[in-house]
Length: 101
Image (cartoon, rainbow, N blue to C red):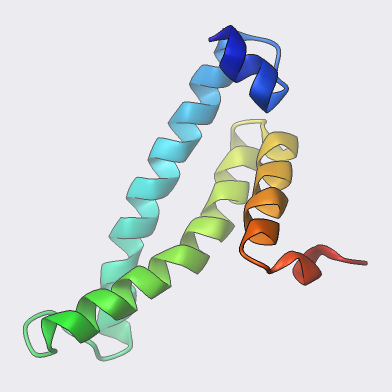
């Protein structure tokens, strides 16, 4: 745990617990929301080719996850951690220009 706390720059085991909970909730909710969003876009699992349906669904999960991660981080009082995490992750994907001022 100490290695993880040092790597993430946090102080307590309680923060680790909250951060892991936020990651779990965010992943579950974003995956759950992607299905109805596909249906809203007219892409149904029963009528669309499996490759199209799952490709679109996975592509939808990414932006949903990004928004929810910061949102749930804020709700659980860990906005600073998740905002920094978000910027680091997006910069690794080459999207760092989104955060330049």
